[in-house]
Length: 223
Ligand SMILES: *[C@@H]1O[C@H](CO)[C@@H](O)[C@H](O)[C@H]1NC(C)=O
Ligand SMILES: *[C@@H]1O[C@H](CO)[C@@H](O)[C@H](O)[C@H]1NC(C)=O
Image 1 (cartoon, rainbow, N blue to C red):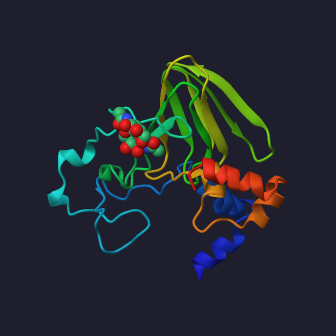
Image 2: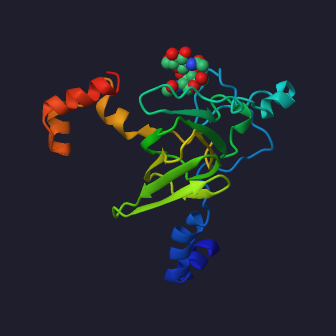
């Protein structure tokens, strides 16, 4: 067949380019949309990667509006922070657009503890206060910076990062993600207060601590 002959004559590097480089030319985290609108039908009975679209004739302007980030989160908790998410689970108009935003409020001294977003890179802008932000690369290098209002930082997808309020008062930042549902893995709670618990034998060895320290951490994190 003519096509097959043509393909077999392509130089090796051209084929390598087509296979390896072309897909990676897309730096997006979520797949591209295939239509203008696909407002999430959060109650759909079928499950797909993302959410099915609600019928176009039922789409309203309100589907593209969300005011949930206008209110300050309650920071009276063990970390002194509160994350309010505007992701597809609460803002259906985001479905298929590969975007979402978080609001993070900090009490004085509040910490957004080391965590990972498995499905998105993040860029955040400080709105109020002073924050120490940092992430650690897979080669264990910490990149960190103290930011004040109007300043930004970027966190590459999947890397462990944190934000600590180092100012005198409250602090607030907004974080944008290239995913409609970036997900969050909070390391202290993931490791110490999962259900069921990770066996002590794993944690004592991993952190080189005894079981007493583990139960101490568990009780302080509310388990
Ligand atoms: C964050 O704030 C909201 C609104 O005040 C509150 O309902 C929620 O329980 C808070 N979350 C945490 C973890 O404190
Ligand atoms: C914030 O959360 C704490 C602890 O759950 C609660 O006691 C307090 O009433 C809440 N504050 C507001 C303003 O809702």
